[in-house]
Image (cartoon, rainbow, N blue to C red):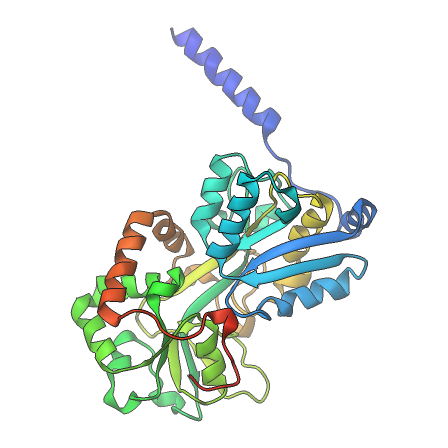
Amino acid sequence: MNKLISTFITLAMTVSSVFAAEIETRSLEELYAEAVSEGGELVLRAGGDKDDQADYYLDMFKKRFPKIKLTHSVDLSFYHASRFDNALEKNDGANIPDIIQLQTLHDFDYYAEHGLLEIYKPKNWDKVYPDYKDPHGNWVGLFGVAFSNVVNTKVIAEDKAPRDALDYLDPSLKGKIILTYPHTDDAVLYQFWNLKEKYGWEYLEKLIATEPTWVRGTSMPYVAINNAWYGASFTSSWAFVPWPESDTRFMLPKEDYFLTWFQVAAIPVQAKNKAAAKLYLNWMLSKEFQGKWLQFPARMDVASPGGYKEVRHYNTSPADFHRFMLKRDKVERFRLQMEQLIGPYEGAAPLEMNYSVKP
């Protein structure tokens, strides 16, 4: 029996080594040439809630690789995921993108379990934090997104800015706070889950009683704060290094936990432009891009901007957010609880909002 078990283990290890994905070794220029030869097209579906949200890095990609015709769309990740599901269900290859880049991390686990993702490890794979990649090569995180305090220092003086949860209960902030409905966004829902876990339901009730302005999507808070319509939010994001001539600042909590996740990307098995998709993943994980990202990089050997430390040195856990996203029964129950507490969401959908008008 022991000999049989030993033989089985040896066979399993042999099969595993045969099918293990090797890390890409080709240069960006070699990958670029192959992508151009393939047809020079790339179709990307990026999760987000404002149509220009991906322009910062996609404009860089287009400039770096001008012979690639990039077609992309930004939409809420669960919409992109459901469209991908429908295309698979109908065997509709015309609507299957070359890259899916989503915030709904649980979708990648599902797709990987069903063999729907290309096994591929881009160059610099070994330099990506272990928690931010699938060990088998199904998916990889490209860049970190942290949600914490976004503050306009002209509306709220920096030394008076809310940093921790209890600060947001300060009566002097009434009318200056804008928040995203937690029941419309899983990332924000996770933030409220952690507030509930630390401070209890009583805190959530007190926060809601301060009558913050509620909006759908996480883009309007940073737009509204940057326009000085409101003073602060913890349900949005901003660059670690302030934009020139902007009064908006990103401020981490003094004590509280905050949210970070890594936006994940993968190549569908049925993608038509796999060479271009591989070029994209390799460029996103190159120092060319990682060194220009606005918050936490995905690579362990690239420093965070603005003097920030590595993500592991802060009171945040991308892996915990991933675990939360996998617990769909808990997520959906808590979503409905928050809707009962705050009320049904109102207002335009994020991609239909008029960002030039104060909400």
